[in-house]
Image (cartoon, rainbow, N blue to C red):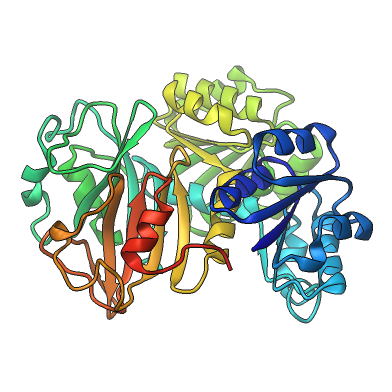
Length: 454
């Protein structure tokens, strides 16, 4: 399948890499010679230098033969025009665009079938804001992902010396939740992700991924020795689009909110639009201001400015001044592991949020979604089990799963099953498989579903 990607930034390069790894015919367009050179030399794809909104450049990239156009430049206008031209030059089946301007997002008639014909529009800021809000709801979580239409929740949890099951093999933790609605699906340790077996155990410092029902999260935290008070008071640095989305959600749910921003005009607009919030202007990250506003008394601090360095600095300052829960948004993935290791509780990537939405949308047929986690080498694939699937009709413990592949949940007739070794998958089940990456062909053989795109 041929895919034209307009935009060679973080999102475009990541999607191009994922698609090329699955042997798709990918052409990348960008107006930056350095990005084009990187794509040509480092990825197994074609790259074209030029403007993504140019009919001539799009034609040179082969948009007439493409089955999908993914426009993810930093310009909404370029992305929309690229999709419009793709419709005019060829009957491109799928058109996806990254759209930041909330006005466009709200005017669905303009973007959809009756307008520009965009099949999916992604707002990374909104996706990041939704991810952050889930972390405020569950203060001790490192990440929260809802799956199977919200029936299943995957929660990232950091293991501390207070955990009563440190050192115990997982095979002995069945009494941890007698009705089997809990599964430790993955362990992230020293930058490496482990799909655990019964002989593995938890260590202090591990970040684990626990699969459970949304109502079972509090039980999971208690079983791991984690107690936490609900968050009521929040301070946020940055009145960007991400910040505004979060603020509206927090205020609607009656949180106490203070917003600090370095742009005076933006502060005035925020104060007018969000009268329930306390809006403060500071020309720079000011420790004295934080002290005056008694930052040590807030339950959570969120840094969502448009500058990675400002977000990191303000988050670390808040942590050093006694804030228990600190969340930051980052653009560059190179910072993510570093920031997590030096004290920031949660790091949200707008790029990863956008990539997850795109990958979830364009998976084919019986595959319902594909979500990337943590270090971006771990993936959850949700698919519908077929009669021909090798995993159907036999106990899971009798199936020869490749290393790094684990069935973590199944939905049958609306009911969720967190499976054990004796459980069986039935035709029609919606099955969630976790893999550490590079196992696409092996999973295809197991489930009899081609995991290619479109």
